[in-house]
Image (cartoon, rainbow, N blue to C red; front, top):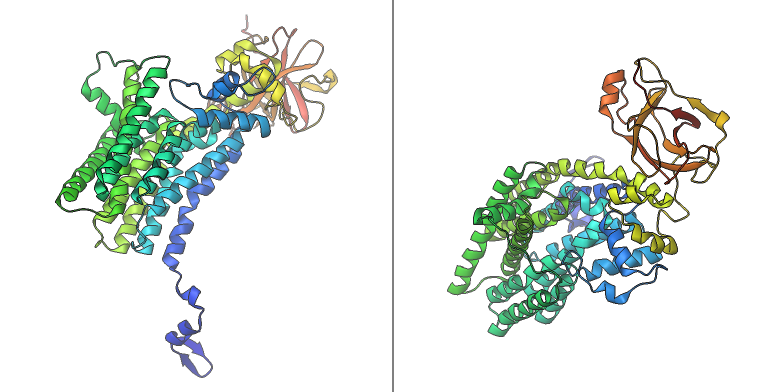
Length: 562
C-alpha cells in the first residue's frame, strides 16, 4: 500500500496506474544485465590502455601480404600462416594498415565486437521458453567468460584477437544456424570460420551431431562430415609442411595438453590445476553428449539441447587439435591467453547444458551458481592479465627501434625489418604523424636538437637523494638494448631520450617500467622508476636524458670505485 492524504491506496491500484511496458520489466533481470556489462567495460578500458603499436604476427603478416609501396598482394592473402588458413585476419590486418594507420586499438576494438557477437549468439542459442531471469543470468555469465581477464591478450594485442576471435564467432554462429535447422547457412558460417583459422575444422563433426540430435534426415547429418573431410584433405594437400608427430609422447600427454587448454580459465599460472579442472569440464561435456545420444536413440531431444551438445563437441575437438599441435612441437601444457576462448566456450556449454537439463531448479539457485562460477573465472584470470600487461612495456622501445631503423633490436623484439618499406609507405604507426617519444612538449622528438644548457645532471644512486638514476646495461651504444632507472623528486620520469654528440635526439623508448628493487634499495614508494631505450645504429657518443615535469636530466652509469 502507498500513503495518501488521509489514508492508503492499495498497491494493486498503483500497479494498474503504471504503464504496461513498465510492469512487464523484470527488474532482477535488469540488475543482472547491468552486472554482465562490467567485464565489457573492463575490456574497453583494457583496449584504451594498451599500446598504440601492433604486436608480433601483425608485422610478419603485413610484410608478406604487401609490396614495398604498401599495395596488397592478393595471392598472399590466401597463403597459410604457421600452417593455418588465416585469410580473414590477414585481410583485416591490411585494411587496418591501409585505412586506420595500423592501430592496435582498432583491432582490439574489432576483437571486442566479435566477442560481443559471440555473447549474442550464445544468448540466441538459449530457448525463449527459458525463464527470463535464468536466461539473463546465463547471458551475463557468457559475458564474464568471453570477456574474461584470462583473454586479456586477445583484446590488448589486437593482432592476437583478430587471429583467433573471428573463427570462434563464425563457428558458434554455424552451431546456432544448425540448431535452428538452417543447413546451408550453417555450412557457409563454418567455411567462414575455416578461412579464419585452422582450429575451426573442428566445427564440422559438431554440426553433424546437432543435425543428428535434432532428428534431421540422414543427408543433413552426412553433409557436414563430407564437407569437413574435403576441407581437411584440401588443407593437407596444400599445406607446405606436413603435420609433425609427437615423438615419444604418450596418450596421457595428449590428454593433459587438451585438458589444460579447456581448464586454463581457472588457472593463470599453475598447469596442474588447469589440467584437473579442464579434465572435469571435459568429462562433463562428454557425459552430456553421451546421455543426449542415448536419449536421441530412445525418442528425440529438444533443439536447444542439440545445439549446446554440438558446442561441447566442437570445443572438445578444438582443444584436442591444439593439444596435438603443441605435443607435435614438444611443448607442454599451455596457459597462453590466445586459447582463453576455448576454455570460455567450454564453461559456457557446460553451464547451459546443466541449466537446460534440470529445468526444475529454482531461479534463485541457478542465478547464484551461474554468476558465481562466471565471476570466479573472471577473477582467476588476473594472473594471465598481469603477464600480458608486462609485454606492453616492450612496445615503446619497439616503436623507436622501427623509427630509427635498428635491425638488431627489431630482431630481438621480433619485428621483421622487411616490413619497414611497406610500413613507411602506408604511414603505419610508428611512421604516422601521431608518433611521439612521450615528453609532452615540442622540440623533444626524434631529430630535434636539445640545448645542453637545459640538461641537468642526476646524482649517482644513494638513499635520501631526490634526483638519482643509473644506466644498468653498461655503455650506451646504438642498436642495442639500454636499460636503467631514474627518480626526480623521488618520482618516476615521464620519458627517456637518447642524444648523440651533437645533442640531437637519435633514440628513445619507454619510461614507467616497474622496478620494485629500486624502491626497496632507496627506501622510496615509487615502484615504476625503470626505463628502456634504443638509439639509431652508429649514433656517435650517445647518452641518456630523461624528462620529468618539463625538465631534462642526464643519466650516467655508475662506475666501480678503486
